[in-house]
Length: 603
Image (cartoon, rainbow, N blue to C red; front, top):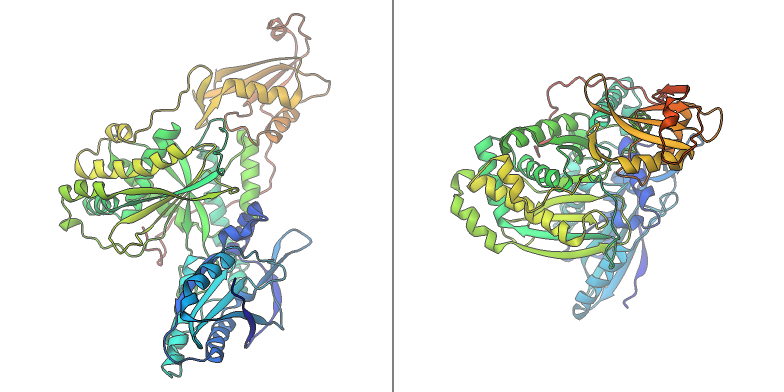
């Protein structure tokens, strides 16, 4: 193994201090907390090559000037006494770079070693720099700089800004330029200033409206798209990531985007809705979208984590693919308007609404389109071009992970082989999507797009083309409050929660005609109220994807004399009611949708 020497990076630090964390930082902190201790899974890595006659000192000075410019790269984090996350900048700080001296024949060995080491970096976010840098010196000259950054310090857009500035600064030094192009523009907004805005009156109104949007979404979405009992995980690891490379997806998207005057991102999201709707049997569900939130020039050039995950409703409505497409597009646009929010307030709202609806709401399905600008060649693409391209599509499993906190993450990126194809990358929880089904999801997206572009946009035909059969839901299953619910699972939930002497869960009609679950029971102890029964049920909802707490509880005094008899329901009623009480944990301003702010070009 090659060894490195430590070299100090010269820094010019403007300030230190302690401030509240930004919304983006708090969101990523929560995601990393779910992954601990394997937080390195979300580190971001980059490498840039160096040409010219530069010294090690010059490269280190370039690194120091760029790093000094962006405070997120040295921000540490701690939680206050109230549990709120704080960001901290030390007034005195030091950064070391690892420098490897090798000869030309060791380049491949070093590249692999550095890649492995950076991928395994586990930052202590309370004490460490969330940034680690390596310099490769080949035959006496610096030839590469590689670095890894914690995702709490930068999102993908911030990483691109950082990479561009560092590249330009090193190139400028090699060419003896006084000021790199990126340094001629003001620095992007720093995390301290982002937090100050979010705590201002104007920022508070933005966050209140976002919470109102979350209330609307959470009150209407299913608890999870996958209303089914988990299966045993795959032996090689619970979470599998596969890659499906397809030029046919690109060409079909271009045809459909021009035909319907939308972007290819909206087209792919609609295809995802068709495939997942068929696989899960849910006509409507929520999917997490990555909102960049870089809506001002200051944020567009910021090196920091501004991105947050906002949920959008998608539904299989109307007779054709165009209706699904319009639903997906309008849902995404509304979601992006409210992509900046306080995650702790959102979590409190989720708990409140989960209690009201009698379920554990889970955010487990995500879509992320990270491609560059589309080429928009729809007028040049023919139906035959799309059909012929399918023969070139390939699939492979590329990664297996022991831990994650999702059921499916679908990422779309440009092909890395120089072609005009795309790569559909799917990370699947094999307890809900076994490897063969995960692959079928990616292939089904291509099939839906190709079919819609070349032959039929009839929704029923596209659903059949996915290759999935509807989930088997026979006796005991019904769609309640937008969620597929299994009556035996509801009965087990109530029995586990309060150990009743007798129980009968029935389906009755609500005043609006919708099905309502009513639990008739004889309590196992005195002094039990509908509120106590409901609270006990909701406390046990975790890990029960097919259950739901009843809408009403009717408590009887009669102790059943015969097992299985329902004569006890003729006895006196001790108490009845829904058991639901508003907790007041979160207040939200209903969102008022104005024009879409500038700065979001994906859709």
